[in-house]
Amino acid sequence: MTQYRKGLVLDFGGVLTTPLLPAALAFEKREGLAAGTLLTGLYLDPEGIRLTERLERGTLTQTHWNEAAGRLLGVRPENLMGRVFADLRPETSVIAAAAAARRAGVKVGILSNSVGLAPWNLYDGYELEKLYDAVVLSEVHGTRKPEPEMYRLVLDALDLKAEDCVFVEDTEQYLPPAAELGFATVHAVDPARTVTALESLLGVPLSGKDPDRVIA
Image (tube, rainbow, N blue to C red):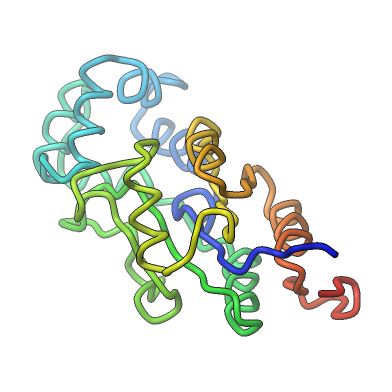
């Protein structure tokens, strides 16, 4: 008999939102930057990596990140984080699937490497505290994915074991540490494929298209 998972842990950016890369490329175009400047400057350059990791841990404010990252990229710092991700939109199919999972009795948590909550708040309008059973933001706890402690925090908040849960993440390198703890993992590259994978792992219909397709 198939043992379905009873917990669902979701990354935020790139899972509950539209993909990050198109938003980053749109920012570069608006700012007159060469394609790849943002990713090279912030995610490949050692100083950019250090700044972003400090931001995610909560040891650097978003305002200070804006100033330092602006210097690295050669752009004005005002609300830089908000400008970078201005094109992000809710990924409605995954949000709806998470709501359907909750209605079916699955505990659903958010596990996010946060980017500061002010002056721009990535999570505004998503009602995380209302719509999910647990919300774990890296800056609140001084840790970040892929550190194992980050995953354990959401398990504790959901009162579940990793073996009971599915973890959905768009950053592939954050999946192996979760799998090592016992999570089933889903690499979020396409919303429809993500929802289909979750239906198989949770044993409940999530798309609303065919309620008889998944038999628990």
